Length: 222
Ligand code: AMP
Image (cartoon, rainbow, N blue to C red):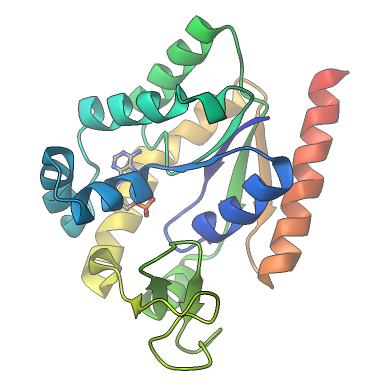
């Protein structure tokens, strides 16, 4: 399956993407994770991306599209992928349409995770992420680790992302509304959007998402 995941920062895209990708046996491709890996490895790409990320703004399209396409052309993505955080504006969505067309394949669904804005701010302010694996996510109040600052899953160090400060979150939300939300209409016109609530337990949201994706797949096959 080829799936795009959209939703505001703090909707739980990364967490859900990790579970869904495993269930669907496709790679989880997160442009945010790819940028963060480049930053920690000190690459030129990472240096270019860092200032934009710290400010909560989008990294320029030419850098982002090339990086995403490169990752999507790896052998493990041959039969499908789950895109998390890409595309994030209309020109990226159109570049993805083009790339898929060239490959003679199409998206199966665009999963839209819906969450109220006040919940987003609460979720992000307390979010702590594992340095070893960004799908190991905790929250200081909602799902605290057994030992403060230590990942329950792998013992890695938990940290607060530089761009999870309250001020940057507001910019990221603004960017989401003005630049990313329009891609939902773009995909609605292609009949691809399935919207689910991202509220509730992680497992409940995963179940909801799997059900919605199965329905979308059945509808497209008929
Ligand atoms: P994320 O981990 O998806 O929340 O992304 C963190 C940050 O990485 C974003 O706030 C952007 O600065 C940058 N980023 C991730 N994906 C993209 C994208 N598709 N286009 C531009 N910037 C991106």
